[in-house]
Length: 324
Ligand code: SF4
Image 1 (cartoon, helix red, strand yellow):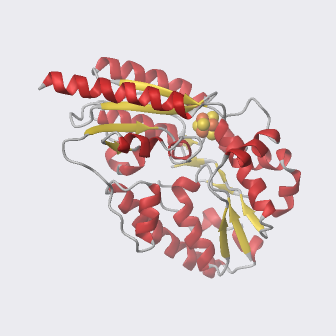
Image 2: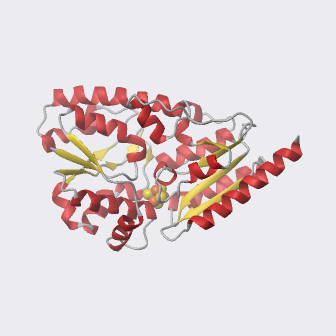
Image 3: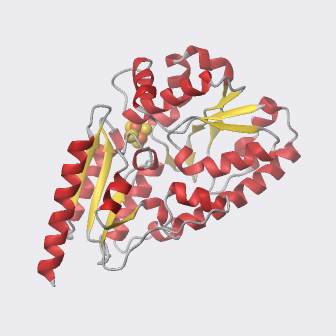
């Protein structure tokens, strides 16, 4: 059978695990195309207007997979991690957001709740409903998940060497293309959710734009979870899973002299970011770390983004030159 995976939201974090799991259960994985303007238009038409752009993007990928006529579309509901950190409410309501926006998707959706006990590793219990959806035994599920966890940890190890998502995925598939870090270049921490920073349309390829300006780019998923969980100075306790990851990353990297500046890429009307965005501003101000917020929605243009990041990079270059 063909299992469609929308190239959106946590695809940019968990895809290696999902791909390995479904493939090892004997199914073919089909991924929607990279987001483009036409796809997004369709997602926007079928989604309530008040919601953040990543959810509109997600719906556009579900529509794309329906056109590809896959047998199933995987729409998991991530609930909480470690028994105490919750996902953003949009993740909690994702299956409903999809099926009430796109009724044709309802019959094809594989949806169930996932709440892993520890970050980055899953238990067979988390995926048990797959036995019914795909008619597989618990033993087969357990074996497939064991391999999927191994593949995912290999992928995470590449990320922790500084690979970005696409590079780490290629490296997992045997095509090693090391990250282009340059000596003497500026180092910028690009903070934001994986589905914003890696989506080519939402991010307007900000990582490549920065690299073209001779900047080394670091993201939160390049850092080890244990490392970011232990900032030198304790900050606020953040409630949402990925928001806590980005907040802890900023707390960790604020005191790192190698980081010249921080850019926060956020989506318009993101609730959790309205909280941590302010904390980032206050913390960066306190530690004198140059900081800029870029807020994107479906109308943001390339020219606007290019001008803002060019100005930020020029300011950092000027500051670094004068500090010598
Ligand atoms: S964290 Fe923000 S951007 Fe992400 S799904 Fe929730 S509201 Fe949308």
